[in-house]
Length: 320
Image (cartoon, one colour):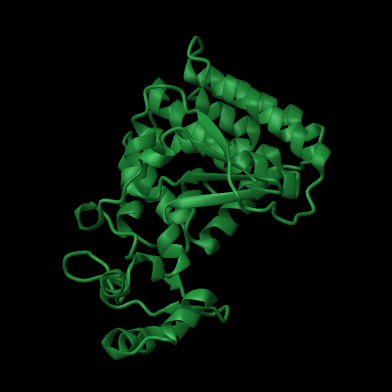
């Protein structure tokens, strides 16, 4: 298998208890089957603690029941993981071991990156000075079984290269790059599948009021918004590049590339309106990308909300 990662991927290091946020607070963690099998072999205090906090969510998944302030039951007063301390990080749940990494598999190619939901990762990407770039290497993992249409995959892969070229063209103002990116998305979508934008009348700012609230601070950012002009060239390029890398090629599964391009544009508007810093995009990502409920709602609105139509997004880019 070919592994594709951002050039800075291996530079990421978790800072554990020194982190200004905690990935062990705010959301439930699934207890995957392999981890549960290992926990069944344990004994002593850590086994009793694990057994005492296992629960089921509304979908029937086994989870660790949160405690006060939505903290993981293993998160101690020093913001360190008692499970990690007791049995080693390699035996924590898969979600914990992977965070903030994400994986997209495309048959013989696996793409991995880090998410804005981690403040350290967010700082890294927000403050890149060179255009976001990627490296490929072969590993010993076998290709993943899939039903990908190879022709569509290679079409999208080539198209993504063009999307990066558009958004990373520093001879052009970031606003003009975003307009060009949207136009390119419309062109690409017309070659894939009919895309009918909806007429859901939701207000633009209500889009970001997720039904599942992970951190109240995000709601404060929405309430204290300022409708500014898009200005910062550098970090907005980095934000758009992140979304293009993370989501663009997943259109091979649903043929909806235009919504993925809209995400790149909206990512820029998030920091433009809610706070021009890495913390803001971190909060959004934690609220949205790591809640299946919130993310499903967002994906639906990308296509159905009138305020997120191509024409309306262009107006916002141009501050009209």
